[in-house]
Image (cartoon, rainbow, N blue to C red; front, side, top):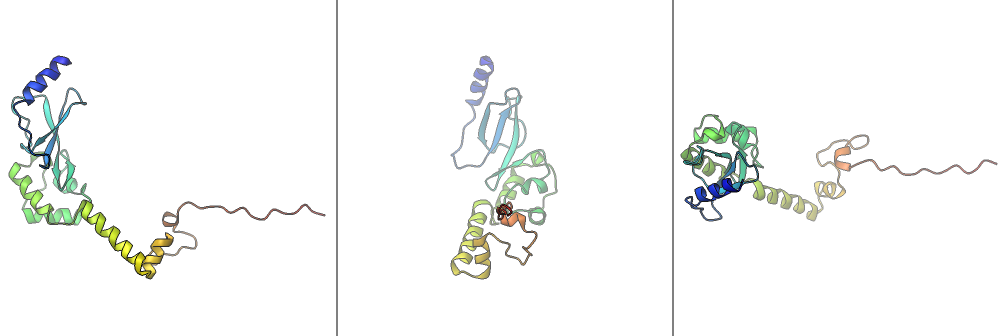
Length: 180
C-alpha cells in the first residue's frame, strides 16, 4: 500500500495543477477508492503512464456530470436543465448523443460554452428565491399563499394538498364529562 502511494506521488509529480478556479476532471485510483485527485481537463482517455487511474466524471456548468451516461441525461444533473433544454443544447452544439466519457476536449469546451449561456444552478435558485420574496413583500394573493404555506396555483385544499400543508396535526377533542 505504501509502495503504491509512493509510486502514485512520483507519477503525479509530472502533472501540473492549474489555477483553483479551472474546471477539471475528477480522477480516482481504481485500486484504492480513497485516493482522488482533481486535475485540469486533460481529455477523457486514461492518463498516459498511469494505467491504474481512470476518469470518473467531467465538470460542466460547475457540476460534475456522470461519465457513464449519455450527454443528454448527464446534462440533466445540472439544476435548470431538463430534457428539452438538454436536447436543444445538443442541437446548438451539433453533438450526437454519445457517452460523456467519449467526448473530445474540443466538444467538451463547446458544450461548456453553450451551457454557460443559460441561467443554471446558483443563479437560477437565487432568481427564484428573489421572485418569491418579491411576491411576499407586495402581499399579493400568491405571496400570501407562499407565506401561509398553501398551494398558489388554484388547487383545492379542503381534503388534499398534504404536500404543501405538511403532516396532519390532530387536535384533541372535548372529553365527555362523567355521566350523572
